[in-house]
Length: 270
Image 1 (cartoon, helix red, strand yellow):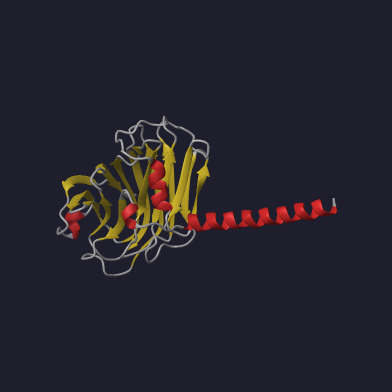
Image 2: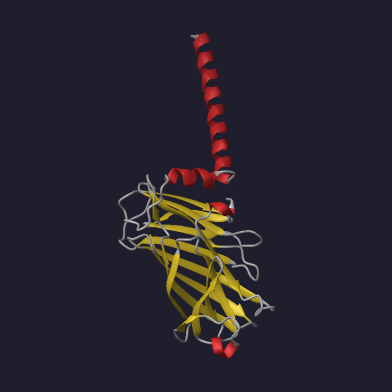
């Protein structure tokens, strides 16, 4: 876990609260993130859903003052949706059907699209996120919440994959990764970062990742006047990573004391 104010951007997946009151479900959510050389990212979210009421769905995106969102595209198994630009949340079901757009709110935007048909649906939502990765004094990196707590429904299974557009092979030799807010795993696999849930998200559960890249892999457009180590220290405060480190330090201390005791006994007998 980490405190919300440490996050450099937030994403919430939601259904219009005025539109959906009945059963909704997202049994599977796959998120693919491709990091570009300028620090932006092309993100595709693939949702398998069940909806039996409502008019629209949306992704809330907090811009934090420097994030930008563009190139929204939505499609289902039948067709690609028409991007109408400014989204009207008060439009009816038929007016929203097979359309998508952006609704500006006080602290960010909502990427919106019409449910279009009730029942089971397969949506692919693609957009560009500017300045996801920023240049720090000692590394390039981000601390970003890819999936926020969700009020109306919770994804059952989420899998997130992050790779580089320039095909750089990411591993522990050139990158560092941390996961927060969910019961699951995060690790390197075949040159990518992979995170997945072990159980459905609920309550305050979210998917937040912190990623540090060695300088030179990309050239981010945005320069920060601080060290990435400061971001790491602040994010890890009060997290499970600190508890695990304390446990490892305790284990090493016990082993050290035991080794010293054995050495003392051996010296006495010697």
